[in-house]
Image (tube, rainbow, N blue to C red; front, side, top):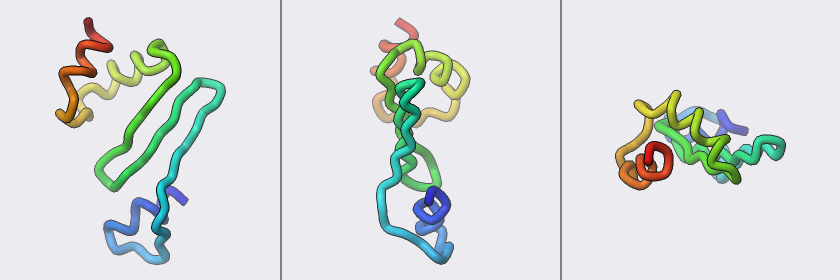
Length: 74
């Protein structure tokens, strides 16, 4: 399903026009890949998101980066 959704923007067939959410209930994470450039990550606990923020900080888009810095660095 993930490939079918993301491949639509690249002309890959077959395709599906749907939003995909990947949920890890044990870790309290939700991933929403929105196109071939990235995904949103949300979590129920800050402690689960901090390691992701630290490891993938260079991959983050600048949209709302000040809020992310305040939440995870401040």
